[in-house]
Image (cartoon, rainbow, N blue to C red; front, side, top):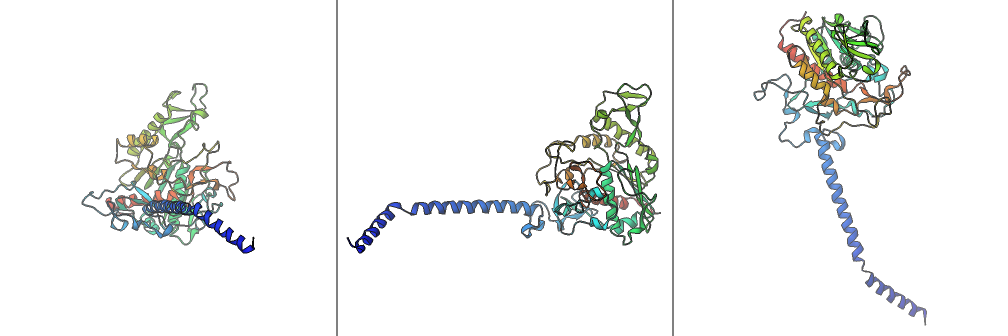
Length: 439
């Protein structure tokens, strides 16, 4: 058989096998898979783009202006917070809203503010992202006034604003110092009146803005009521008590301030009270059976009675900023709880159950609603799992911090700035209603 005959037979065999193999079937299967994959990707991109558009996230150059319009108005269509609306009689719930991305944020940079202690300087302590600084709180029904440091300082001229509470209150106080100081080129004109450095180990700190003769003050009072040694004859195991019927000893220093911002809650726990031998006292009676929720409610009653009787609320604005949620995952601060991996806010729904501290606070303060105004930042702050100091509370000059992550306190700039923007809006509203001339 010749070579040519062999080639002819080979071609004939290949042709028969090709007909038998039917290449059309695998081609159709491949085509169907490709189409299904493309459809899945298209649906995924569409659904996620709607989410990103809704929340004003800038990836893909999307913004809140591109959101589907009905029924909510766009940002530009919303009334300003201080403007009047015939439909709502001028009322706007500034605590009902969402977080939107804003390239104009933050309001200041931490290296430019010398009034932040090292534990809140997340970027300078090595945090690699700054996403958490770019979110602005947007109420549903109105626009907040843009924070104007010069305007607020002018209204605070010859006056005092004091933050009274725990270390989360100090977090907010340092934020306010930075926000106001952004309008002051000469930072040396802002100084602590007793020449004390900012540190959480101080019971109180008072910073004067010399150009405006105003002070921005912080008083450490984590329970707001007095804490002291156990009385004579106290039951065994009682090392100290919380005097639920007496204000914290710092009250004589802040009682005459022109703006008061209270907070409390993080220390009202078994771990920081009864577990340490700290029980609850009224008069000379110490209770071993009173639960913490009841004791917290009594402390708020004492605060309400004190402010109602001792603070001139025609002159002084009084606010209570509600509990700031923690975001520990996999434990608490002392046993491996963490949050450093979270880089974005939570865009899901709010929890069904209201935080216990907020329920108690609202119930007590509602008895005399004109004495202390509640700033309910708890729901909005619940979403900001991304803004904690976490592992970035260590830095130069801060080596004595305990090991572990901090998912309670907040990076600065960050979430407390938004609380202060809400405070600024309420502050301006109060000023517009009260016609008492500035001193």
